[in-house]
Length: 307
Image (tube, rainbow, N blue to C red):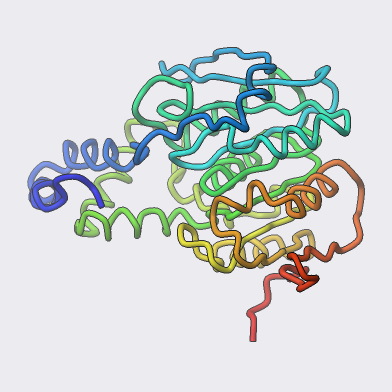
């Protein structure tokens, strides 16, 4: 729920009718603000204390970057919304153990990066700059909104050999629907926000708004795709990863887990092992991801509806 939602709703709905420009700016300002700032956890401190920490700027905002290893075989780790790079610690540690070089960042308004907001265009520019610095990625591993943003960047010049998505957002429309529901604003407000993005933030990219969805033009990503999503995820519906699995067809494999939710999936040893195996190898055998007691909790799924 957004603070002062009734007042904001009334203001935006009225402004969209008489002053669409200001309405679009205000709506976008609210849409791109993280709901809180995630803090570094004790189990993440050692790895991040050992990182080579850097800075870069996108659209006048500061980004904090992290790198480990000798620079060979880089793998990009992309955090989700209201999250931070350190939540992908388990993947970075496993990649380092295999001789790979993890690369990560805190987007503006996230983790250790200053600021109060970021957006999918900024994520794209960050990923493009890291690609320029580190070269083609052996893999990209992304969580939640980070998957949506990563696939946007990967369809726009960034190259990777493989892609792993965890609790992925596939549809930009889902985020807009959540924003509308949280504030109760009219569809007219969303149109004003779209106009603001296309006219003010990306004037040289006609139709960029329609390209935000991760299921758009999937053929532009030639890499094989591995998707993990928990059936009890209370933040991003399982249908979002099914959407991506269908879009990428035979190049995609889809693993459904049980009981890990939206966040614990990032620390589950079997999910991490299966993801890193895929990210660091050629074609892999279909893994059986099991929970204690031997009960199969996840298996391969080509995105077909479950009976």
